[in-house]
Image (cartoon, rainbow, N blue to C red; front, top):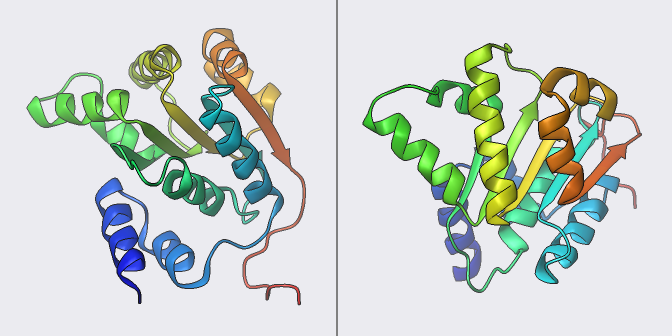
Length: 191
């Protein structure tokens, strides 16, 4: 492993990127998928200040998480500011009302230069979570920090679940991409 790969592995660990995604990206590189193509387009747009939010939507195993992690590691890589990767279950755990640790975590998520929230729509929706998520998305929208959400929901399901306020902010500052192909898990790379 090169020095660059070791440093990238260390940083992705610090950012909260799951071990499997770190291993795939550092040791093998990202598979050329529809999701990765959308992540590259987003990375280019973000660098030009044309977009700050990306939603990768589609079925399970289509490469959304890996593509989001690729973008996190490659957008503005030489500067690598504060970045965070959180699965939606981790976001739920931060809670709206909590102690000092939860408030510090929410601040880090709000202020991160780059935030990935994985598997939106798989959480148990409560009023408390809806309020916290709305606040987080509003602050991400206002701060212009890069935000990628991955979900299995369609845009209509997302709108119905989270409401027009959040959906409108996502559509106003970014792109929504539907990925329509079968799961890639367990399939070899095409030659």
